[in-house]
Image (cartoon, rainbow, N blue to C red; front, side):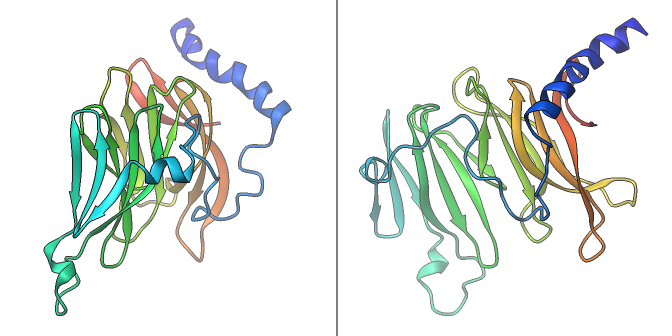
Length: 224
């Protein structure tokens, strides 16, 4: 019993603070509409970001600490017959902290993202835009997409330099399960409030706040 209470205590302490500050998910009527921003990370001004990137034919060239980082569009993009395999790259934002680039990849019928680490040149695919914790040690991507791109939650560890995919959650069908999520805000270094919906359009219900939290056995979703 005491062991269970120790794990519940951070959540119980959090609830009064949330109630005083705001009603989580209030006004969030649609999971496909984003709360703006990148969490605690602040993107560089547009002109400064563009000075670190250029187009070279079919490639987006980014300035890396160890040399140029090339993101090359699929060769089929230059063809006039088959555009299904076409993937193009567009710079969305550049960050001093954490040092990296957010790049959108445009596919034939959907878009996703790449996080490109400026120091090591490492790349990691994201289903949706990233949200960074206050220390910039964790990054989460919460995507409500049900078509082509991932519908679910991805958590990445940035604490040791570079990027490591730490956890991924994909909702399973069922009336008692959450079907879609949207990011609300971080409420600590290892806890975030998400908005959750049950079912699918047009019979979708919600939103209701849930907690994304890192515990003794890793990351998990817990009702508030």
